[in-house]
Image (cartoon, rainbow, N blue to C red):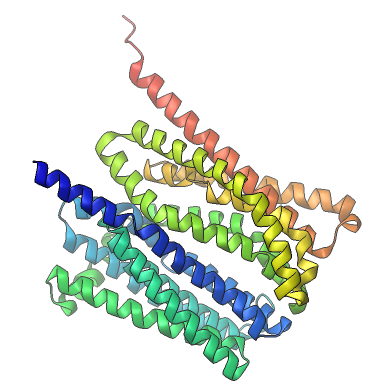
Length: 435
């Protein structure tokens, strides 16, 4: 027993290395965006940012909700030794993503412009989104097995490869579109290698498992998947509605300024994803083994601790970001007025684990309704405010205000809903029968 305890302790200590390694990977991905702002001109960086926006949008839509289902169900499947069923679900996600990408590329060839991008750039953005989604799907397996260190290595090698490849291509060609295409090629190659490893470890013929995946597409719980898709769509709009509005309304050079300041939000999302890479499977396992009340306590502790830590770090981060723009990115000085707004949003987004708890505990429909209401009311309040005070704000700050409304509304309302649901379920379970 003592030896077993020592082995487990050593394993846990080793797994803790995933945090600095994954943070390095996320840092490299952020560094590549900053480097693009230096290598490309302002308009080119605007095109690159708009391409990433199209990519992120497809990455959210491309699996029709199956990615959220995979993230929720795969940890439980593997815990119950149903590795083949988990592989089938993974392949079904990839097949659906490929089909959606084909439809997107075909549709993109008929559009004139999306987010200020011509049809060719839109197509490349969709392919880039498919490559991102494929990588996210195949790395769900390492997270679901409770191996965050392996997941961190997967992200590190991808980040390092993308950083080098995209910067070389951008420097040689001066083209944002070619840089996006190079990034997509790297992600697809790494996803292919990771999927091959998963198939070999499962010890099933690849052709056979693909045939089973295709045959069972009709057996997928599509109603649940579509609900999860709607949750993802509404959640995506909470995070990116301001950027889509800015991309459609602003000229490329003005959007480049907004997108540059919004790197703060991208960093926040990456940090939240890094933390949630372990928190989501952990909450899922805790909810399955100990019940939602224990999972809620863990979620609340993490959210409050992260919110407090984010507030402490935001002030020096804000000062450092302002000086960094003055020294190294003088072409983007006009974006510094957005930093206070974006740092406030960043703190809220990093500390938001309430949505994960609501989805894991089976309340995705309530989360969908809540987020839809917050989105609708937030946009309505924003438009009403601007109808009377537009002239008092810059064109950049207008969209930053929308982001603040949506971020604060989502955080407060999802936390309140999680507490209310748990309070009601506890009251119902402890109520005595009335004879």
